Image (tube, rainbow over all chains, first blue to last red; front, side, top):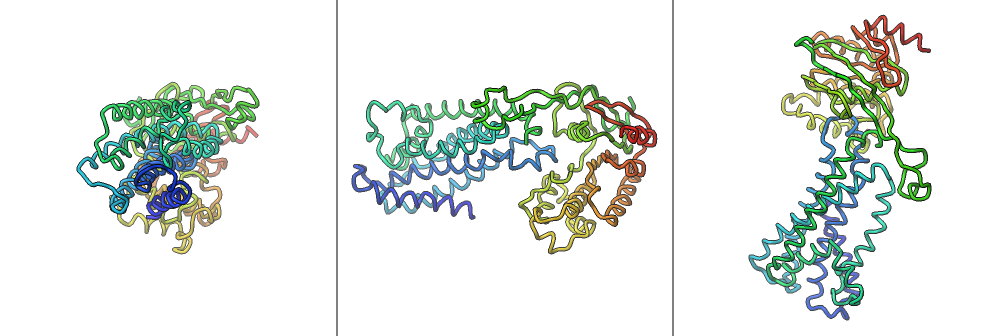
Length: 226
Length: 242
């Protein structure tokens, strides 16, 4: 329950900050709905990666003593946060009644959207946590990159606020692809177009295969390094 | 090759990546421009067959590969070459500081390890048995393991290993830090388990312990088995090392 509480408190705090700073000159209708629909996905992503990056190193005692698949450590972190995300989305759906959300059956599409985002996140986590076994500053580096990534992703501001010459940064940002997908369900009140789904599918499968490959390449060496 | 062989280790090679001195972070990798790893052979062409019900002592200097051999047998480390075939179940290898989660309480550790081994469902008094055998009080078991003394940790670890009624019991130097009373109790218990037909792998730096428990023994040096034979002969060989 503590995890769920924090999962809810952090986006709320950021939402308040953004309302104070940006709301009046953002040029976005239903600003609260816009920001929140991005924030809940961002914090899912940032919580899971932050917790998982040290999951192999942190479970050294168990990994050295028991013949259990090391894969379960990143996987369990991801599954518990995925569960938290689904709860958060349900609370969000009720609260956003006041912020102008329009209910409809298309909202069920959020489930495949969460699955794709989770697959992407799991892939990234497998990569980060296995590299972190050998280079212990990966966690620190990732903690430094994350805020930069957050502000490069149009969560608190509209995509059109980015200068045209830097548009490439946004279109290359894999996290924004998923946030856009979730946002078109909650904010644009419509089923996302097929090319958005295909885009997310390609990104998540590619990330997962990369993470899986790196993890399985390195996992036999974990014991000597943790 | 008899049908009664429970552990079959054939021509096993294990090598680890060893951090090159000074390269432990990406920053080091970039600033020092050294290759981060070199491969180091830990087990070199090890073959050992263990019969069901046999108790095998493993002796050797620090760093000779004893713990790595135990972990390879238990399936925790996959060998680079060679094969390991085991026809039985293991208790967790609870060495000092491995296996128990420091942040969790004694009870939580018991519950976790029993759940990971599926013992809880088979044996409902497992928790009481562990508490009784370890002689740790209720109050102690409610504390996080990080606050335990090394002797208390060893008591808990050994008691949990025993609770699983596994076919193979691996004891990795865990008894050395218990007090005399507990050590004697453990020895009695190990003898009792041995009579029940459990296979025992026993690593120790005390030849007396190996003599008391084991029928046979091996002596390891630099990742190889240099001597094998009865526990008595091998203990003599071990003493001559120093």
